Amino acid sequence: MEREIYFDPVFKMARQQFDAVADLLEIHGGERDQLILPKRAISVSIPIHREDGSIAVFQGYRVQHHLALGPTKGGTRFTPTLTLGESAALAVWMSWKCALAGLPYGGAKGGVAVDPRSLTPTELQRVSRRYMLEMIPFVGPQTDIMGPDLGTNEQVMAWFMDSYSSHAGKSVAEIVTGKPTVLGGCAGRREATGRGVVFLVERAYNHLQISPQGGTAIVQGFGNVGSVTACGLAYRTGMKVIGISDQMIALYNPKGIDVSVADRYVAEHKSLEGFDGGEMIDPAELLTLPCDVLVPAAIERVITQSNAGQLRCRILAEAANGPTTPEADAILEQRRDEIFVIPDILCNVGGVVVSYFEWVQDIQNFLWTDTEVIDRLCRILEGAFSAVIRRAKERGISNRSSALSIGIERVRAAKQIRGLFP
Ligand code: NAD
Image 1 (cartoon, helix red, strand yellow):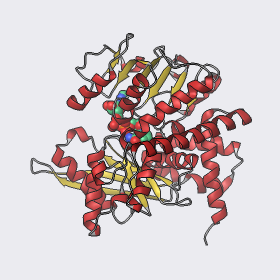
Image 2 (cartoon, helix red, strand yellow; image 1 turned 90 degrees about the horizontal axis):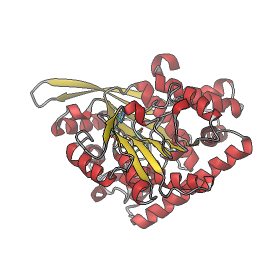
Image 3 (cartoon, protein in one colour; image 1 turned 135 degrees about the vertical axis):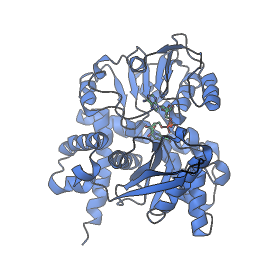
Image 4 (spheres, protein in one colour; image 1 turned 120 degrees about the vertical axis):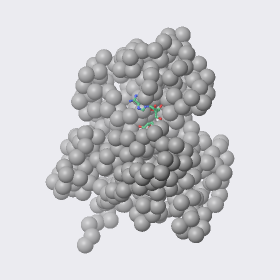
């Protein structure tokens, strides 16, 4: 069943990672399928009128992984290559991530197979609203809560919330997170994932007993997560960001790139293309340049068997979901003393933690200050980081196996104690 429905290289990767940890945790037979296979997968057609009068139909998906710990929670991406299998893999990772952070959620993920840059603002609004409309029977504040991801932003979340609310006949802020603050969005949600990455990089430095001051960083992807991370590393941690990239170009400057200027440039031009803060280089080369911290913050499967042996960083901070393939992971495992990996489900957990804060605040109609949010976020990140490091050391396993095993174990415990019905 899994092969037919979720057939996709990203799902295969999530399954491989899970199987390796299931071996460690001695999970066998049908229980493996029970833990990995999603509870629900929804596929919808999204027809819209284009501004030229023609009709276009896009494919939309939502996968809800498990309901053992509470409602499902997860991002919505608008990317041209999105598949049901990719959504399923991301939903599965989201489950382990939420459980690692102790959040009362199962994982979900979905979106629309569309390139948002090919749409006018009006068309983007039509796709967003129609997608939410198609999802109304399957989502809800106590069923499945959406958030932003690749290709979506606060505006798209506002359209989702408005469409759901119009249908409900009342304002339902808690149906999505990552909304603008004026609609009940949480202070600091937009920056939360990147802030979390920066906190964890600092924590890794501290663990390794070295200082980040004056070190160098390279960041792949300059969207929400990549730009906030790059600015945090430069202005909070005192590092020199020597390489950045997006879907169009990669830039290198050994003297350091002024990332706040780059951020303003991207806000205006939608891409780094034309930004003169560094020398243009081959994007593939960016990942293997010498640096202290390498941050993949774009898409899946960029660190592979062919470049994992060539990475020249001290810390690999996986801000993106699934940037490292299992084959690459085996190579990094052999280089464990050279490269400290902050695995994705730990590294980017700050986003869903603050989404959880937003959901809680919206349900209670009660807003926290930026300081309260950051303080609570840091405490959860610290707890998750320490737990991962402790288990990795105690069991002699990689940070990734440690993080995944904590998450998987918690979901397994919830499923076991609830029992199988009927
Ligand atoms: P975004 O759409 O805001 O930005 C994505 C960036 O990646 C853009 O700069 C884009 O140009 C670039 N990009 C796309 N394809 C690329 C390629 N092939 N090579 C280099 N750059 C490329 O998305 P985001 O929200 O910043 O998400 C980035 C990653 O972080 C994704 O893996 C996402 O799942 C993960 N993530 C995001 C959040 C969040 O809160 N937004 C939370 C957790 C994890």
